[in-house]
Image 1 (cartoon, rainbow, N blue to C red):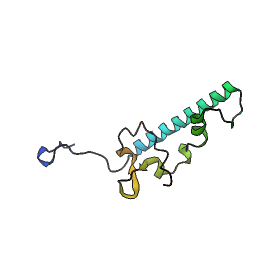
Image 2: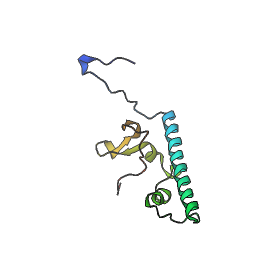
Image 3: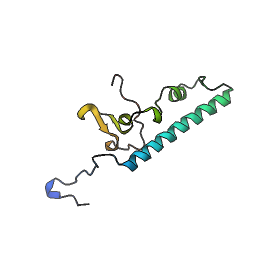
Image 4: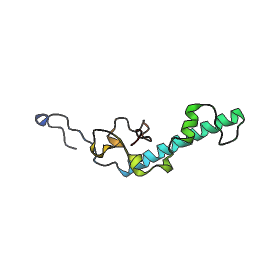
Length: 113
C-alpha cells in the first residue's frame, strides 16, 4: 500500500470498489445469527406466557421483528449488500462504504422505495 501524498491533498480514502466474498459471507452469517436470536427470544416469551407458536407475545418490538422484519433468506442480494442513500447514483450505496456497517441493520428501505 502506498503512503498518502501530502502534496496531492493529504489522506487518500482507501475503499475497495466492491465488497469482497469474505465480507459477504461474514455479513450473511451475522444476519443469520440475528435471525436466530430473534427466534429464540420470541420462543422464550411464548414459553413464559404459555402461548402456542404463531401467536403474538404482546411485546410490540419482538412481534414486529418476528413477523414483519425481513429474514436473511428472504432478502435479495441487492438488499443485502446495498443500502438506500439519496446522494448516490441510483440511490443505492454499497454497504461496506457505510461507517460501522458491521454493527447496523440495513434490512429495511425507506417507505415507497
